[in-house]
Amino acid sequence: MNKAFFINGGAGRVLCSIPGLERYAETHDDFVIIAESWGDLYMNCPTLRDKCYPTHHKGLFEEKLKDKEIVSPEPYRLNAYFNQKCNLIQAFDMMINDLDEIPETRPLKLDLTKADQVIGYNIVQEVKEKLKKEKTIVIQPFGSTVKAEGRFIIDPSGRSFELANIQAIIDKLKDFYNIIVMSDVSIPGIENSGVAWPQGVSLNAWAGIINAADYFLGCDSVGQHLAHALGKPATVVIGSTFPENISYPDNKNFRIVDLGEGRRKYSPIRMSFEDAIDRDNEALMLMKEAKQIDAIVEGIKKKLGKPKKNLIGTIPPTMKGADINVNGDLLGQGSKFNGFADKQIKKSARKTAVEQVLEMNDVN
Image 1: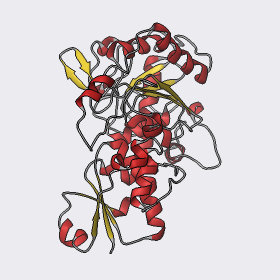
Image 2: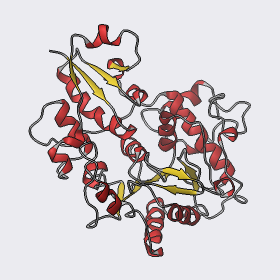
Image 3: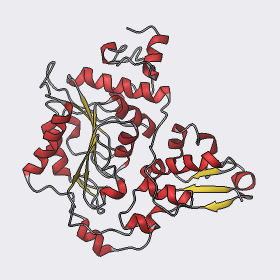
Image 4: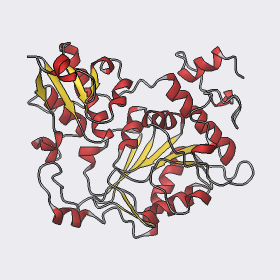
């Protein structure tokens, strides 16, 4: 019987299901994917985009599901996963394709639309114009389980940066690099901290921003999966979760900073509720010593090369969505940033979407 795959959970899980579904598509044609969340991410995969439907699709049951076997792959319930023998991509692959052996990790690739690439390019270029630095870092400080309680930001799961730590890291980096903060949660004082904080940006557009930036710094959240898929160098700081499960230790462009190594316990998410384990893991992202923060900062500087401090002028206040032309003319006509600096575009045999748009519009 043909299958319907129901995929749920956070954006990172959706992204990690793509390689396994692509493998399934190599030998099967009559199947569908029901995206219980983050369905737009499947639009970045040419093989799967026509197979994907949201749960509210009209006539979904009668037209797409009634003659299908319903499959809900849950990687967190796979023995090889919760014993740290495979990562999330491998776990989805095993469950979707009924594999007994742990496969090689299939590549995660995203086919971004021209619009998302150009939006990301425009935002990064405008940030460079305003913050006056040569290179740009996207920082995602928090995972999806973070909570704002007044002026406090807490993550009971132990996956997000501690507020004081990420503020210290940003303070040490912003003198040398343009910083774009990827967060729906406001960091206290961010409005006047000299960094960019775009609001109202879709996740696919964030992929465009990461694609146009020079580096990514994040935690156990979706941004690191996007950086991996887009081939961007990254530093990923991990506390309560295992790098073998949720990140890419074999990616030569990734630097994993494992703060919880030897101290954490596996939290059996989607199997049982282990409050004691979560309490033990809660503080694993806390960096108590300045040398830990300095090591992260110096590692980024080493990867990006010797930074140039304050290339042009001083650092202005942060930019919110109103300052960044996200939804307007993609070429910046009539916005605060007119056109592109073509010296930033790397020439290659295969033109990028940005280069194609520049040529079509004869922009210098």
